[in-house]
Length: 229
Image (cartoon, rainbow, N blue to C red; front, top):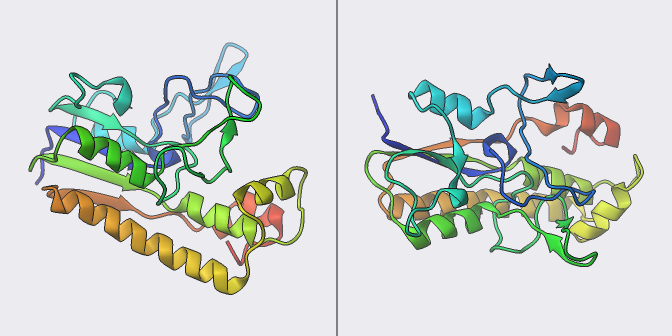
């Protein structure tokens, strides 16, 4: 069985361990942690449980997972340890600074400048620009949920809650069924291409985690379009 000396994750919220200077919709610094275990610390609820990538890393004996760009040494990731480039809102495709699954988020510097999550393509760009895979690296990719949600929002013609139509506009407006199907096929093909970039560069172990059935989420039910999602 594989015993990796390094784990490198790319993707979306399931592998998001927090970024320096992240901002939320209220222009406040935020570290997102998407876990199933929510504990109370004093009077505040806090997600103190393991994220998905932390659970994977723990199974291989790694004590923690840190944000990759905060841990570069001489411009490169260390040769051992567990790191993640993942960001909430990431899509499969898109260079740095391009649209994400949330239509991007306003940053603290300007009311007109938006912070966009690094998409999978951009995350792998960052990694390959600074180094190459080794035969004992385990790469974990979690991606696709944002593509489904963003495309589904564009395919929902109602306004199920306040702000929904604004988000749809930020994402590019309404899509037809044919456009939705084409968009999903493009995203699937692009995911395969990104995995191939890693294997062509020498990656031996790549674990790809597909999106859950978004149509079964309470949020999809709220939109009235669970079948589409």
